[in-house]
Image 1: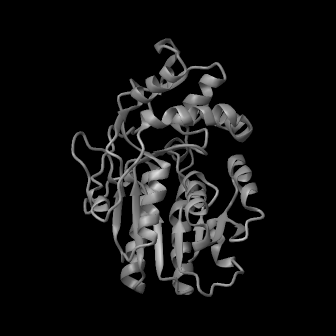
Image 2: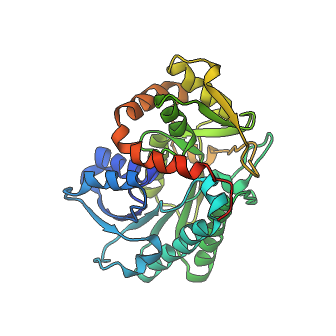
Length: 332
């Protein structure tokens, strides 16, 4: 199978191409697209420079129509390319609109023009908004809160339009909060781990009561592969694990692994418009035979060890994150 993977050196995209190479190397020829905006992505890109079944194009997602490749026999496009951190979207909303809305439109149009029949668009469970106690199903109305989730919901509206107007096949996947190795240091778990490594405290927004549905990136990759290798047409799938933890719970799990106590918690100004709880029903995906394998408590030690042993991967990017964090809620 010949596939295009956009955002191939971002967190989930990079784990996905590693997943394919590890488990199905002889079955895929991968055309990777990434803007290499972060230092982490640049380091990730070094791994595949001499891989026979992989070719890479360093372009922005909005310039995908300039690609000069042999479009013949491309079977699928998996679109990971996106800006994804809510804090950044609060400060730079237009950047998220450009990448997540215009970029998605460019990818859909590219597939249309090149007659690519199988398209997978990676969205997020955040498009549903917050719920105190219920679980969102794929048919529920979207109610995004942040510029990030609004941009992802907008991309889904464009997807619907391309399906109705141009008779395309675009399947959507809405994963819960991912965690794992190769996650950029701006996100909660790596940011907390790295702060402790550097002798700082874990920062907790508000009182830390906000609840997230946590999903290991390897489970996300296996779910995406299930859709990619199946015969689905214009479906939407939630991906989840059933594991719900408060932000304060995550912080305490990490502290326990470092053998530190609650004195290393630092409560900081809460995020504007902070959604209380994300929760999805993923039984539709389970009904096609997929099931999650990983849990936070079983996985966190390995993740902590990876960040301890790979400071060359995150060090430079973490310096940028620290600088940006000082004005993270000030719109630019």
